[in-house]
Image: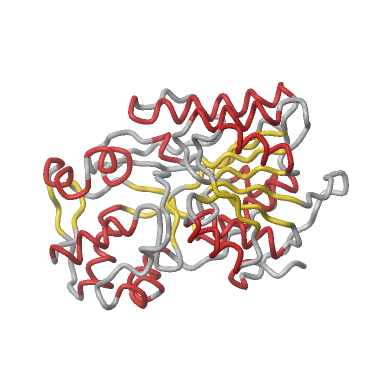
Length: 334
């Protein structure tokens, strides 16, 4: 058994026909997802090369035993060279930079190497303004995405179709990620609550999002690298929660008050920004992750999201009303 990230007791097996990958190229290596992914592959005895944008981030990677590569998603030549030199590419930097995705796929075409794209279950957003939608999506559910996420959905499809170009492509769609007092989404709620003294949700707050603990997500990347077939896609959620309940947990854990407050969409737009409200805060994104459990042997074991907000890492790290993760480069995955 490998020692898993953050000491979660996962048990894994590797397919005998899966070639051992020695070098992993990770984009967004100093981001919230990227750091966890890099660590998980290091623990599994892989050499990791990480793309970062500056010298400070490069030094931080070097200190963790990761080979830094300074560059950006706009540098197609750098991306192509790094991809060709690696055995596996894990793209965590952005779900919405189609040009860099295309450059990486072009570099890998015909090599048989593995490319893992990080998308998100935000592709299922329904613009519900706080109302519950009973629909739960599997990877095979017919879906016409909302315009705000249409490009992301199209990029997912492009990656899957690239399996016909001699690339072992895999698309992972994490739901709301949490853990370590951070997130792609939760800090927006927390910062607004701390600064205003009010934890907000839209409308009735009955809309629901799936969620996944950071260490469980990192485990899914490793399992996908070991077991997934070319052209596959996986929704990743361990549970789900009402956004009203999430806002209430923020109020209790960070503000010390019992209840959150409902607001109209225009109030939320002013507080958080229209795109984030429409795609995440007021929408539903409900998924079935049975495929990952069956095909990859993924068994998430992290703490409950609401418990972590009220009495876990978020309460510990945000107790002094500051952002403990200002140094972490975030990439929007909602």
